[in-house]
Image (cartoon, rainbow over all chains, first blue to last red; front, top):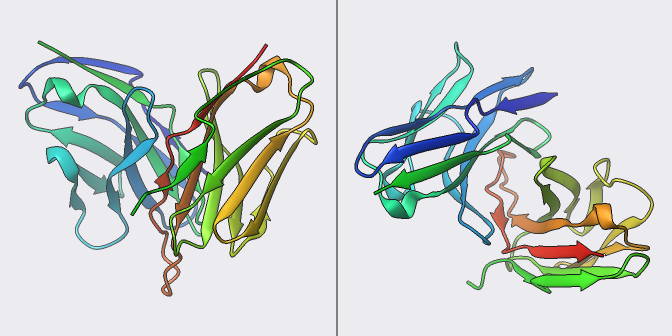
Length: 112
Length: 117
């Protein structure tokens, strides 16, 4: 079985400031990790994914995430956020069953 | 590519009525997933299909829910009879299976917002 914990339900941050959204997972098998973004009244859009290889993964819209196996984490970062980054962000894990298990989500609000 | 298409986008119905949600996956994708999103429970996987065959329906809440995939380009999720607690946003997602067996990216539709009065 696998699970995902997103430690912060809400993260307010000022425009142009850096942000980190935290994600920890647990799994008994090798995992694949994903971050999705959901804008209001829309479906989920893939930001980035880790399948194998380099532990630093770059995604769309300037986001990146680092896979840390020893800490079972996959935190999402952006060095400078924009108002348009305001959305809900979901971390997800998939193991051998190829099904996604989602975290509870983090609402990122970028303030002017 | 048109992406995953879901219809209707919004559905308001009365308790006891039958509700049918529809999904058209991305052409060429052979896995299809139905999710439900609520404030209380977040995103839950209800059922997924591979090559039109249901693989895991353990997330289907009860017998009132059923899903079908008669062909590679169409799937339905039916609730009969509907209840107020079924009110949620229902998402469909599809993915393409790779020969290496690695986990494939799921592409989500815009969702159907269901309200049962």
